Image (cartoon, rainbow, N blue to C red; front, side, top):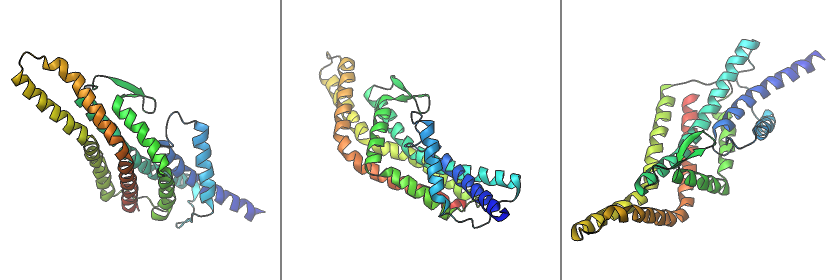
Length: 259
């Protein structure tokens, strides 16, 4: 009887450690961490995932002894989950950054809307591109990539083996820098189109001084920006494949540095 109780306690401790990492991952990831996603769904998903992983994840270092050691290991697992979710969140934030640049170039920069997930003001185009990106992300099974990365994280960084190294910090910094580069690449066609329109308006202002360039320029920039964005939308599937690949690569690179 004592052996049975001891086995139950051990499995429950493993379940708690799995639950800590899974819950932290689902907290920050764009798909599962939405604020409009019911908390019951998030908790249930973390519980079910932990139960599934309970018979597949091996404790390489053995279970922690005592409440203090168990608390330390749980904190480590939460940190690993938050880092994985943070990498995903940063990569998707490049969409917001691209939308902000597009808004500034087309004249929508003074109009923002409230994002229910972060309770912050976000650009109109950024919010539109973000929602559209999430739809494509789910369509191309990007959420399966997140679940696969979560399962492989237990193989790369076993439970209780977290080590914050200089390489991990450099990888996080590199991923953060990549957010701005990706945002600039996504918004580059709109920037180029609006720049050409500015050049054309400058030429018109020189050839026809009587024309009010400011009255014509604002709606023209909006039209050109919307037209360019409309042309770009079919290419977003390719962009999302690149983003999914960058997200997976970033997660695996930083996990290697954490073990």
